[in-house]
Length: 180
Image (cartoon, rainbow, N blue to C red):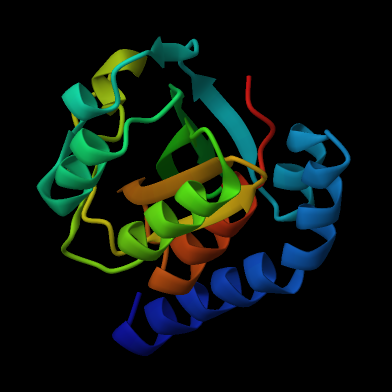
């Protein structure tokens, strides 16, 4: 396939994911996650069990860790899963739910999390799914506040070709997932 044909395939995939993002978000807000992925032409291929942690500091790094040392979280739950399509494209998605004692602290934490390069809550690795481990770059990231909880989603391509827009769209939907 020529480079222009590859670009055209990637752009079509991206347009399709973005075109259905609003409907997918509506579905996930209504508690229908599998329907949300289907609306974008994806399906959940594998998922880890929920991994709870009482100590957010131990699962963080950088300025995020420093923030959590000064302002402890109330709880942390994480999952990792894979979504993919029928063309062999697949992305690994890590989601973390970080709960604080009040909304103000969650908001301050989000302001720090939203700045690239300030550290992170460590995403769960794809090795939990029996796959080679993927390094999450933080480039395909979305955070969604809900009361005292901040949901953080990150995604990376593990096979095929997802554009940056595709991965960003996937994280926008994943950040709306209800806490397990």
